[in-house]
Length: 219
Length: 234
Image 1 (cartoon, helix red, strand yellow):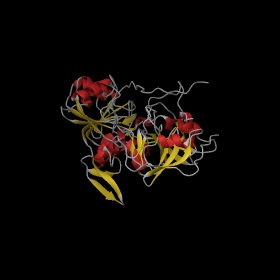
Image 2 (cartoon, rainbow over the protein chains, first blue to last red):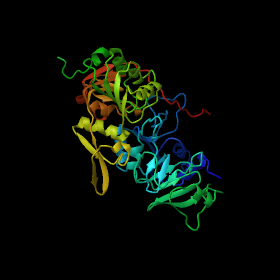
Image 3 (cartoon, each protein chain N blue to C red):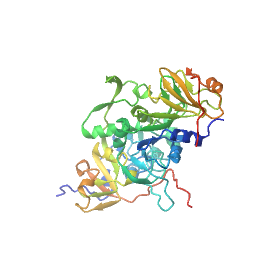
Image 4 (spheres, helix red, strand yellow):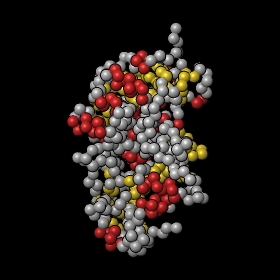
């Protein structure tokens, strides 16, 4: 079975470490916040200028001046700090964020990512995504392995305009956990019940399949 | 003698001198911390042909969306747009030009502009459409793009509290691009929720020192919320 969005968030959460500063993109990455282990301290960075994002407010505490990068109303967690957008991207570009999780349309074997622009469709902009992929050492891309019509999103070369070049090393899809090394995807884990054959079939770029590919384990 | 007194009595006075074709830097992220009354004043004045530098372009009928109604903006420099139908229409018609700029690069362009740094190198955008026509230089084996700073004829800023010397503090994440825009305007106008006595703000907690600020005006704010999200009440 392909992973649900919640399971994908759970799998990403297994990569969290105590004391990590983490930037979570919109969509599945946002859900990762729900799976931070209880015995772990993780601080969420929101690129509009908040380090230490808390939970959503109540109707009583909602405040128009307190939002995250998705423009949702949020609260500041205990120990949070708030700063300008230049300071925020100094943290990001300067490599101070330990883990960045974001979605994509396509990833290729060279570590290129395309996530912001589909030519001939309305282009809304890249927001902070280009800075995030250029600045972070440790990035996890979350996306479905193939489009609804079955076309692979794990390619030999991205077909869409790039968000960043040679910056992606880890990809979690609904079918597999893969790492990118030396111009190939390496199949590290598969979703429970998903066959290696299905992953091979849905991966267009060069895929290296080790002898043993374990299934993901969830608590 | 006005000395350091930056307070002006009206929005009309606050935006005096804004002319057609000027570049305006605006603070705000989405609808959070936008100089909503200064934008409304630009709409009232009817100044046109403006280049507006702002992370976003408001929504239909509010924020910078107001300036689209009378086609007052000819060019937007932003990281993310298209939350409003009018913007899309004018873009597709060719009435509006847009220069999409990565958010961190946009912030740094304003910061550099205000700090007297004409350009800087960043890895952001290398190998992407953003790199087109830009100089690439290698430092320590990695490619970087040369990005030029931005300054504005006017900067329009939303603060929380200011004193008459123009010292400003911002409230929560309504800070965002505001302190950056404030440094990079030839004329920087700040509208605030409260004007306090000089000496009332803790000098160590001032976000924008008065040296950057030319005019301060007191306003009342709607503070519209774009994505109202609350946790369920138990």
